[in-house]
Length: 138
Length: 201
View 1 (cartoon, rainbow over the protein chains, first blue to last red):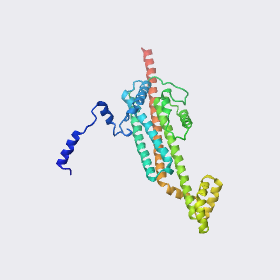
View 2 (cartoon, chains in turn green, blue):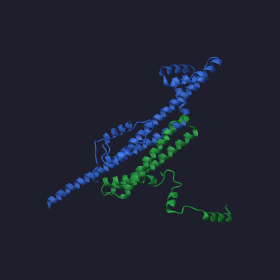
View 3 (cartoon, rainbow over the protein chains, first blue to last red):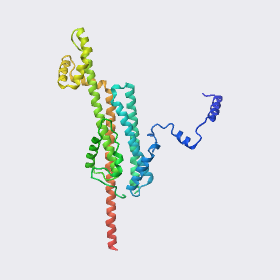
View 4 (tube, each protein chain N blue to C red):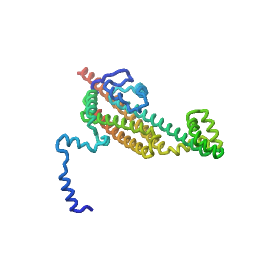
């Protein structure tokens, strides 16, 4: 059980902590804990914003009357699927060199692929909903 | 639907989607031509016409490739584990004198195991020798499965996942196509009915 004195000291120390002050710094630090962004609900990674935007526009141009949100969600999910598969291929290529790997490394890589498969399942499900919304909206 | 996207040959993706197939998720030793050949094969059969259908077809191709890749990996693991089993048996069951056995273990067992894996004739010879010692090929294979159980199990689970996912994509493709077909039918009905009501007026 933490004592009241210790709690107060922690609070005081935390108040003295210096976090980022500028808007740009705050924006950067917001992604400090971001590893790959696959677990985010959608569009987790900012670095793919351009690709998402381009695919969203392509979808909107080819499906008349489609909702912008649905197109963006579909594009974001599609880009996530592509990124997840690339990440999985990297893990698999390492796993194929299993002769040079320890049992622990093999287990870790198998776990990584399993997690990526879960992310892929979620992204496919998000895209399915977005496709439905796209087709319902026009 | 809105404007028809730019179209090429029946089994070639829409120009808007060139980037989608530009960097498929392939291992370093796999040629992109193999991937595109498979894509064209499926595209010829499915005749995707819309962006959504092409995106789903890409999934189907990617997952088919994943399944092939995992199956190849599984075969490699089994072959390697079999080789290890053969090597172990060659060393442990050698029936010469102690000195000859030691020399064999150090100098020849690994070579023989390698030949077992790569040379069919040598393999038959070694299989016959091991059989005489009470270790038929089926026992070697069984032991290889036991030794590689964890890895083989992980691969089998992944293959099952990809096959299930591929089936989901197939159903999705079918459902989307049905919906598109229904909408085209509805649009056609509206036009025809519109023409008739105009004529009646």
